[in-house]
Image (cartoon, rainbow, N blue to C red; front, top):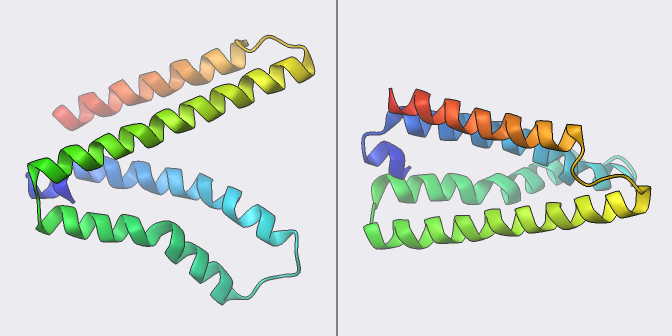
Length: 130
């Protein structure tokens, strides 16, 4: 929301696309444990979707209509903290799995994924700045 409020439509559009891709992959992780049980009702999935996506919708509206430099800095800091937490947890998982399988943690696949992610990040930044 803040990107659109600042007139950064390209950035806002890329953020929406990025969050959409992220939420699709995250949805599998949320739905998989639920599907182990009996087939849940549609209302159950609707409630999970609201729980997972509702705060993002609310945050977009608040950021678009009530922009504040202070709140922007605070929420960006919270976002950075969340990203660092994910990086930490994925790193621990990677090390634990490599120790269990007795394979190097820095494999070609892992390095390729990291490199592809960085390349996508820079290409996105170039497209947003154009």
